Length: 95
Image 1 (cartoon, one colour):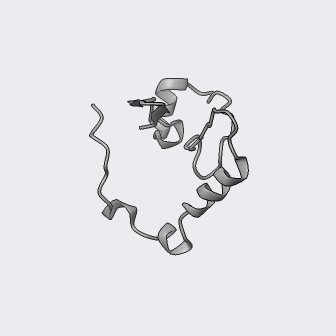
Image 2 (image 1 turned 30 degrees about the vertical axis):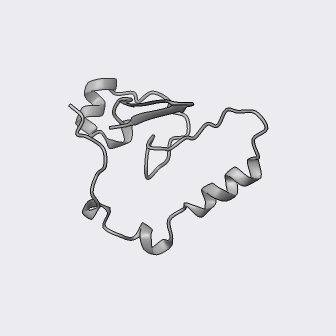
Image 3 (image 1 turned 90 degrees about the vertical axis):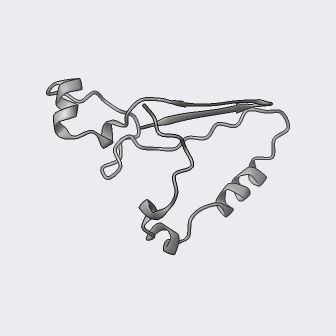
């Protein structure tokens, strides 16, 4: 399940944003799209359309500082190889 998280000032919203096409079985894709999968921007051969996109909107923002801070949050090679299914999912189950 793709999620959308929006945060502006004191307003925060977390909501389902649909299902990743890349996570669908071939049968599900055929059911939804028939024989022709639509063109999907940024399609990745391994991950399909599963991406994370961040958008920052503001005044006098320091791009270099934002990029440096985000780079510090990247996982290490060891963390990437972990079994992520062992981690607790902090989000509620979607219905």
